[in-house]
Each structure stands twice: as C-alpha cells, then as structure tokens.
Image 1 (cartoon, rainbow, N blue to C red):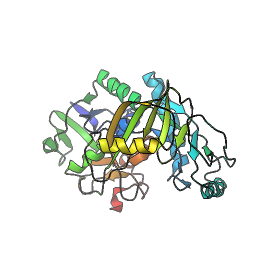
Image 2 (spheres, one colour; image 1 turned 90 degrees about the vertical axis):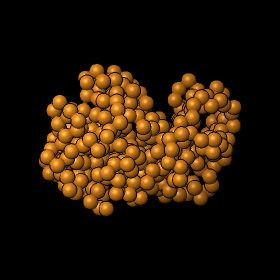
Image 3 (cartoon, rainbow, N blue to C red; image 1 turned 180 degrees about the vertical axis):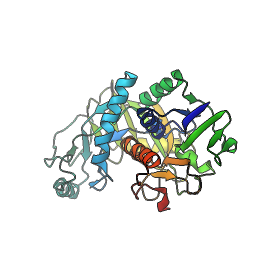
Image 4 (cartoon, rainbow, N blue to C red; image 1 turned 30 degrees about the vertical axis):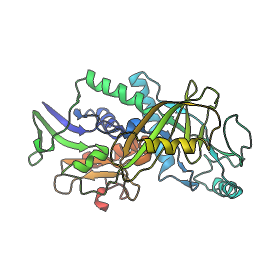
Length: 344
C-alpha cells in the first residue's frame, strides 16, 4: 500500500489533519487504538475569552473564524449537526468581579464578546448573588458525534486501521515504511500518547487529567452555559455536561471518586435543583508548559512531523494549526514561532 501520509491518532488533531489532506488531494491512512479519551471528554467549547482573568485567548478570534466554517463543512459532509451556538453566562463572585468585567469589556479584542451590560436576572435553580456577565458568540462542537461519524467515514473509505501503532516497526531513514505501507510523510497526533513516542517524547508535554459529569436535572431549564468554578453546559432534554477537574498527578484515563466528589461539591454551589448523574468520563489533556501547541518537523528526520499539545481548546486550535503544518511541509512556509517545536 502506498500513500502520501500516515497519521497516527484520530482525535481532534488527527481529524483536522485528515480533512486538510483530503482537501489537498493527498492520500493517507490513519492509525488509532482509542487509547486517548481527551477529545471525547472535552466540552468542545469555543470561547475566545479566559473568564478566570477576563483576558483574550491566544489568537482566539482568528482561530474561531477558521474553525466554524471548518466544522460546518464537516457537518455537511458527514450529514450531522456539530455546532451548537450558546450564550455563556459568567457568574460573578463579587463587586470586584463586576468591575473587572467592565474594564475588560472595553478592550478592543474583547468588545465583540463581553456584553458591558450586567445580567441581573434570576434564573430558577442557578446561584448568582452578584449576577452574570454575558459572553456572546460562543458555543460548542459535539466532539463525540464528530469522532463517531468521522471514524465511520474513514472506515467506509478504507483509510483507517483500528490498531496500536508499533514504533519499532517504523523505518524513517529512506522515506516512510511501516509494515506493508509506504508513505512520503508521517504525522503523529497522539495526544498524551506522545509520551511513549521515541521520536517526540523529549518534548515537554505534561498531560492534565480532566473529569466531567453528564447530569439530568428535570427542574433546571436553561439554554445557556453557566461558567463559574466549573461549567454547566446544556445538551438538551434537561441534560447537562459539568466540568472539569484539573489533575496534574494522575495520568490514567479512568474516572475517579475523587474527581466526582470535587465536581459535585462545586456543582452544589452553582445550582440548587436535584439531579441524577448519567455518565462520568475522564481523559488526559495534552498540555504544554507555555500553553501553546507542539507543531513541526523532527530535527533529524524531515519526513516525520508532529501536531499535538492542543490542550483545553482543541476545537478552536486544530483547524488552524493543521493548515499551518501542511503549508510548512508542502510549501516551506515558516511556522508561527509560538507553535514551532523548535522553541524547545
């Protein structure tokens, strides 16, 4: 079998890269063993504001401008709904919180998103003594629907192998040779799995475990996302995604009682209505110390590349950096120094 590219990993990074390759009429095959769960656990939110500090997300508006048409095209291709625009309401904790919001809403890069008028309305079942700040132009991508249908799409076109990639079987010295496959390039999009990769495990990827709950709350009837110390995201039919935890020590993808307890303790400070837990999920976010992706070509093997480290905002970042990586590989276009692995 001969292809232009091998992609290892089929999370948000792998899907974005595969789509970009298809648009360039490049042939490829993807390897995935579903060992990484971060893309499935993710909230899938797009929001260009860091609401803890009321500061802009790195390249947030520019990333969203690329991402939303990308997911719209994917939705049409897969015949599913992926994009769910939803207003985000930031819960204020104090008068100082409100004042900081006023100051932030006046900044040029945040004016399109932060409503300067405070929301003092009362929403049954939601605790907000000091009111809310409304964040416009936000929403979420249904990553589980995307992953399920894209896997099926690749399966139907015989472009995916559901098996663990064996690094020792890879020969990169004269082109790319892996078992029965010859390729021009290989790109690793393995998320936290990159820590076992002999070509890139030297990079400073520090996975952060995140846990989320899916709850059912029949008495809670909100069509907006609540953002406090946790988020409460409406999924429809009185179901909500609640998250997330940040655990730097535990590197397993198994849900824990400690994680559940933390989420429940925080949730009870956000809503007052009864609820049932429907699901409990966990995954390891591929995070980097400088909060920038890991993108680029191996220093010794020019046919080996990486796209990783998308962190907590993978749905926003993946469409942009996948295009940048392929421009770098195919056209020699320089990478943004902030994402280039050469910074390490």
